[in-house]
Structures are given as C-alpha cells and as structure tokens.
Image 1 (cartoon, rainbow, N blue to C red):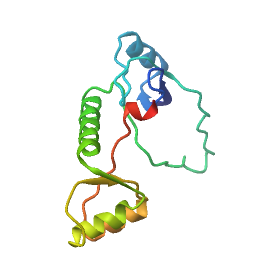
Image 2 (cartoon, one colour):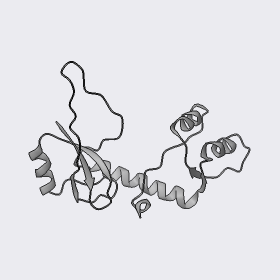
Image 3 (cartoon, helix red, strand yellow):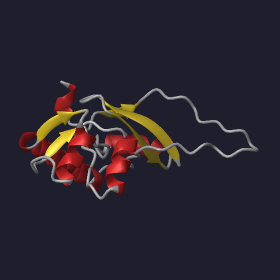
Image 4 (tube, one colour):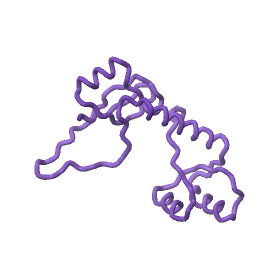
Length: 147
C-alpha cells in the first residue's frame, strides 16, 4: 500500500489516501473516483510530501490523525452530514469563544440557562468535560470557513 498526501484544488483541503499502487491512484483519478472529504470536489492531486523512511532495525513511527481512504464514497456522505450538523449548531447555538468549557459546565450544573453553545476548547478541556459527563463534540471545518 502507498500513502499519498493529497490536496483538493477546489478548497485547498489536505488529506491522505491509501492506494495499492501509483497506477491505482492514476486509474481512480481518471475515473473520477477521487473526492475531497470536505467539499466532495474531484480536483484531487498529489501534494508534495517527504518520504517516510525508517531504519531497518526500528519500526516506522505511528502518527495520529484522520486518514481518508479513496474513493471517499460513504465517508464523504457522512462528512457532509457532519458539516450540516455543524451549520445547524452554528445557526441555532450561541458562540461562546474560548469560554466553551466553562460555559458548558455552568449549563450542565444549572448555573446558566440551558441552550446550545459552541466555541473553542483544548483537548484536555474536552476530556475534562467528558469525564464530568458533559457531552461535547468537535465540529468539522466548513468550506465557507476558508473564504
């Protein structure tokens, strides 16, 4: 399997794709099977990337992050649904900025009016909320965020 760093010419989103071979990437591209998971655009191309080379005696490092396997298909449809959810939260919720974790706690413990909110929180803050039984989800980026 070959991992390529890919980029969408439409929205500039960068993502990874796994292919059996370079020819497989070319064939999928020629058939229009490659799609951006953010905008579902088909103008997908290989991005410049450094080779992943590991010494023979040590395993290659495992890096975290999301990986999209081409063709996107159901994953792209699911991502679009998540984007619609994010649009609904943004249109109906109150933006609280960096005070998200604090405000979520105030709402959870009845110190503030219950309402949908969104904002920014660090990974440790979100973990803390989840440990307290307070539900919080990351919102996916939207194509319109890049305008």
